[in-house]
Length: 261
Image 1 (cartoon, rainbow, N blue to C red):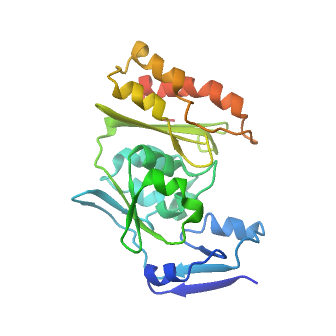
Image 2: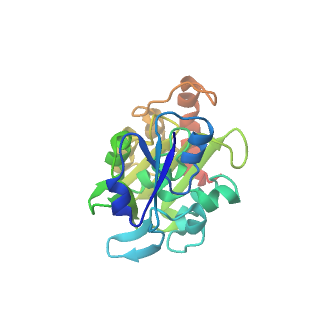
Image 3: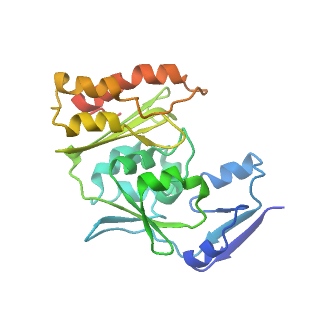
């Protein structure tokens, strides 16, 4: 028997969460699970109040967990995330899919989470605590609190690059995705579809942060080790072997040509 409980605030909703409960935001994940007869939960938790604004603050840009992909596309403050949000589903999905929900989207979904990992975003919980995106993603299967917002840095569009590799163009499920924050001396590379959650390519990052140039000769050592920290698996989209083989090709395109697809 599936029950639906509605609370006034996110804090109250967070207090009601248990192992057998799922939070309903935009519904793209939870309702899909309901339609497919997922028996791992029997309670759906909702909140009347949810943070949806996107606004600049002293520590960066705060994006409410309830903000949708359409909200991101409408915001000039996060214009560098537009190429990511634009490739998530069609108009109906972008009007429903939320930032908070995307953090919990299982592989091969979660394109935005990959970008947020590359951007070193911070996750804000309803209890006020913040957590680095990398730590949050690694332990998200055990999270019982609710996400109220994420904080991203202010980034110029030429510093951030994103590529989504899919068999169905332009908005099919990602066989892999790559996000790169190309700050001088502190490059960050994140991959989606190359592990159970989005993962960083730390070996390749070390090459760039050691002074490598963004040209064909300079990126060659990074390409050679770019899959070292990744954990691809075989699935209906591709084999782990294939993903490892083509990953350097797609990373090279991203770094040299911008790669937005």
